[in-house]
Length: 167
Image (cartoon, rainbow, N blue to C red):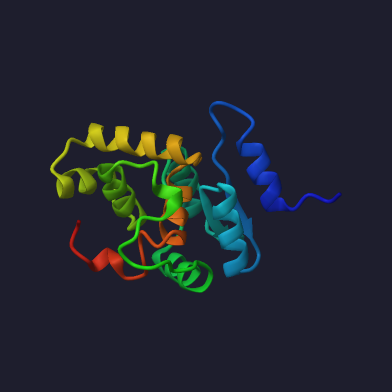
């Protein structure tokens, strides 16, 4: 049986207690490939013609635990591939989260950094980090990139929500 590159990423990332960060370099700007890479747990997606300095910055960003998707790619990906459940309902996948964790996940899904989430919810940045860690553990996610994908897939965040005021 032939293993796809996105399945290989997923399998590689679940092997250890401290999984590596994966940045996918591709020839084509394909929504399908971006989606598969992020769904598998990749920390970023770049085209192979990326400049040397941008690649170095991308590596540092991934090591720091952040995601490497441009807003235009994220918006295009989400609008095309993610389903939209009924608004106002907490999806069954997220039922294990507390109401505060749902608020944090919504803001993570909107691309907010920990400092902005803390300010919006009137909590310390260290408390935000704790909530993010609990969310990742409860949902079996590798990193914030997977949390963003899940937030959109479940309808917790919808395209354009980043311009809405915080919950």
